[in-house]
Image (tube, rainbow, N blue to C red; front, side, top):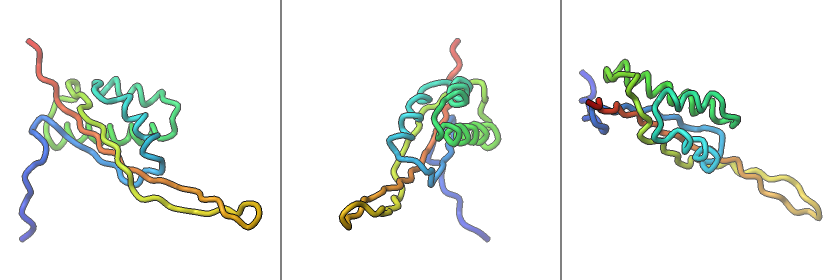
Length: 126
C-alpha cells in the first residue's frame, strides 16, 4: 500500500537534480550556471572546479548529483552526458534593517535562490 507512481516528466535520455535554498542571488547564480550550459558533463565539472565564484562549489555538487542520478537511476552513459539545462529561480528573501543617520533605517536584502540542472545523453555519431 502506497502512493501510485507518477509518470516521468523528462524523456528517457535525461536526468535531473535540484538544489533549493542556495544563499545567493539568482543573478549571481545565473552567471555561474550560464558557464556550464551546453557543455559536456566533464568539461562543466572542470570549469566549476576552477571557478573563483563562491557558489560554484554548490553548482558543482548539483551537477555531480545529476550525473549520479543519470548513471544509477536511469542507466545512462556518463561519458556522453551533456548539460542540457541549468535553470535558476528566485526563492525567498530575508529583509533586514540597519540603523542609519538621523533616525533613518537602511534596508538589507538577503536573497536565496534555487537551481535545477538537467543532463542529457548525447546520441552517438556514426
